Length: 89
Image 1: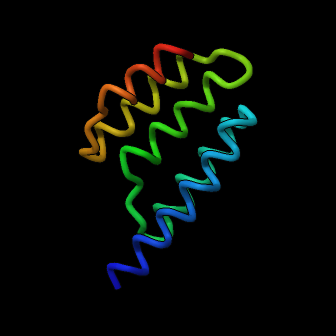
Image 2 (image 1 turned 120 degrees about the vertical axis):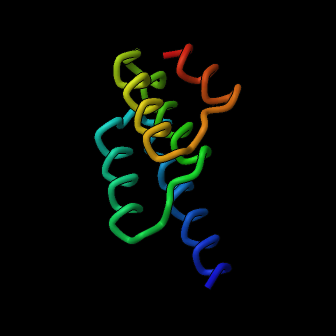
């Protein structure tokens, strides 16, 4: 079961990265919600990638900050990369 979950989170993170590069904040949020609905806990990588969507096209620091708050509420601690990504937004 652990391998299935790891494979699933990798698949979700790949989808997140593609959407983040496009600056699609709403779709990234949908992916995170989908992960939670399927009982796949988003990782620091998942959240940092979603935050990257806030910096891809139009800068959106308020949404980036909201993502950081959501991370913390789920006991996922932002790291240096997360903060640098948020600052870029």
